[in-house]
Image (tube, rainbow, N blue to C red):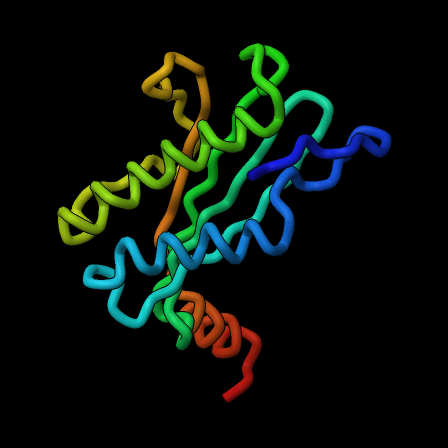
Amino acid sequence: MLEDAKMTGNQARSPITPAENTEITNALQRKYAALTGNRMFTLECEVDVHSISLTLTLKSDDETFFYPVEGRIAWREEGLSQKAATGVLLDVMDNYFQEYLVNDGEVFLPVDWQEYESVEGQKLQLRGQIRNLKLEKMADDLLAGQP
């Protein structure tokens, strides 16, 4: 499903194609449809020669709920291919969102990077912070003197 990214300098193309990205986010939407309400998932991936970073965001259309969960793994250090490392991150993030949603949003990640282990024992880091982008924009506009 996921292809290893092609390296270009220190950056690499995402091992997740646009079609795979859509497939993954649609699968998450179906899996958690009864628990997400009007919120939807988005997925971003960045790769460099040492690590893979994923951001799996659950957000509302009106921007009153924005929860980016970020994960990163040193794929080379963990002895994984980019494809396998991406899969590890997706599994861990999926498991987190399941716990978060089943527990009515009462399970949180730290705001700063925290080290975790996957079920298979790979070391990775996660962080997350729920934000209200609409309220933040209103506050910024108020501070800037805009109505």
